[in-house]
Image (cartoon, rainbow, N blue to C red; front, side, top):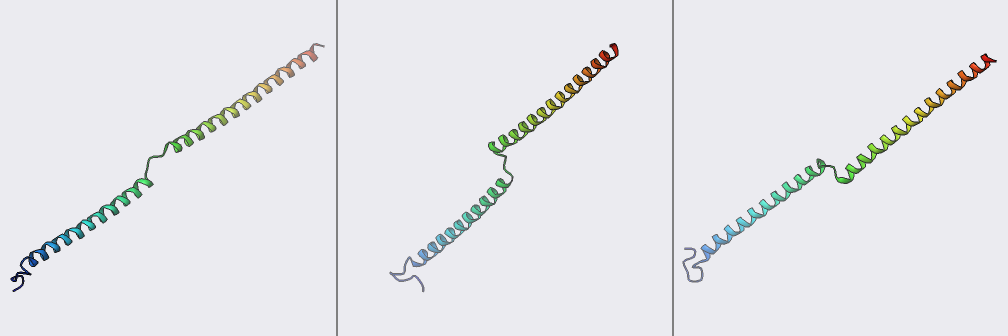
Length: 102
């Protein structure tokens, strides 16, 4: 019978304890691998759907600001052209009135 001698008295118990310890270690490693894989998947998902960083917000604001400045400059040029056209019309009318008067 196995484990009945003096040398082998606790070998059967040691064997089962060692096998259980090995099983728990393997299960623990497996669980840790699964957790690690899950975490890396979640990080990959969070990186693709992350909130824009401060730099991205600043770049967006800079683009909006530049577009607004450009629109203001264009509006100013158009206003100045309209004013110049009105001045030309006034000068033309004055000149016509002066030529009629003479």
